[in-house]
Image (cartoon, rainbow, N blue to C red; front, side, top):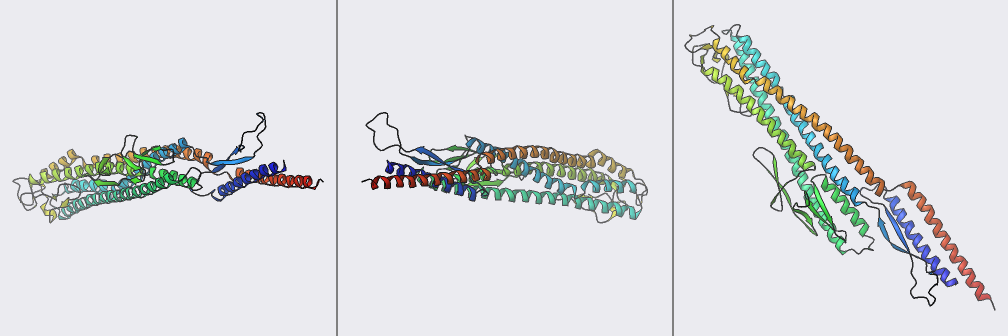
Length: 445
């Protein structure tokens, strides 16, 4: 009997010691990113042989059945899904804010208004040299301002593409690491002490990848994961120990296209998708700016061709170029502004051609077009910001729910320390009592 007591107490002490070790591990990693709380699963220790008496009580002790990771696959999936949506929205808003700044801070609208005002002032005295010089300089400022806006938009696009490429590189790095974890998981046994750490690494890598691209996962019994880009029918990003290579290319309008392992792939969520959406909006804004610039060039040059300048010469184009980037002033002096109609002599005060120029500008309405462009991008930023805030709130709630289920609660771990320490001490006391009983039996003569 004493021997049985010692064996039972010994098994209890070993189980309590294992539980204490796991509790200490939890406490030590309470602040570790990606760590999932562990707990010990205990089970009754079965006897090695069948008792002769069918009704005999099994008094064999306890054993550690395994180490349990308190992970919730559904909550983890929600964190990945909502995190990808929040990352996409945040990246898009940041990109749109850069586009908005590129257009607003260059002052294109103001330069258009100032140019139109200079032409209107020239009507009061079309032969005044200073008024002509002022109109020409306002035209030069307008062209340079539009050039700057186009250059700023190009720089914003380059920045977005650089960040997207960095995201692609990060996805490839993380996918390769996930493939290596898969290989290690496939070789680890269920009882391996390293398996829980590998599963933590796996889940952490999946969450990190989801901030860049949208993915779908399929888990195998050995803990390995098959990762697809996009939905369940998307191409394989990670399969077993192999990771496919994600690549991007720039389309003619500055937006991005993607391939995975050489096959065309679509990215609908994550920060890379958000940057591509911002690039699509940037392409739209750049197209509108080009249209405004082309409208000014066409209206002014068309009027110039229909009149004569201060010297009575046929009007020459005031602007060269065809879009926002190439627009430039083409006249050498203010005297070349064709204010008078064709056939008028030198120093003519007939400003009917200048009126026609202003009328053509009014029809093109560059100021109105620029105002609409600014309003559109500002509205897009405001609307996307509301969406981003909502998605970030949802993603935050998902992370809180996951942390509550799988994170380490130091108060609970403190309770576990006391409980398992008492269990260890109690089993030690049982072994002492069993030893005393055994000694007493031996002392009987």
